[in-house]
Length: 124
Image 1 (tube, rainbow, N blue to C red):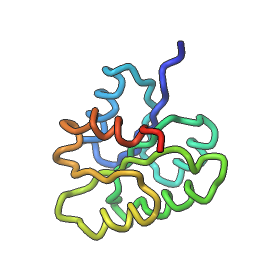
Image 2: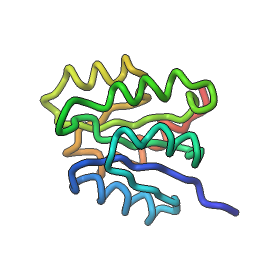
Image 3: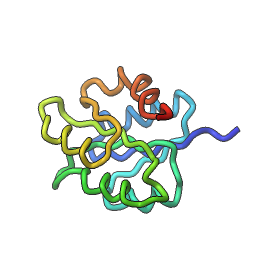
């Protein structure tokens, strides 16, 4: 049986690489990407079961990418779990408005990853 595929987008090394490693350790195939503009085409091509994304970028945020994903009927079903600093409440709110299924604090995402996956992948 083929392992489920997750795409992990991150610009900063931690916790992005740790998330990718944790997913791999729990049986996921993982593709990492560090350029936000490449994410939509990668999602279209690879058809992942999940996208985990760092929301705060060096120049801007990831919300526009989430909106693009959610506008495309072929990939709108792919759940997005975003993460950012706990203090950035506006970015949390903006990401959910853009279509992120869940937004977690970057300081707690590793400890909560199993529960986040369960929630994000639950059939509605």
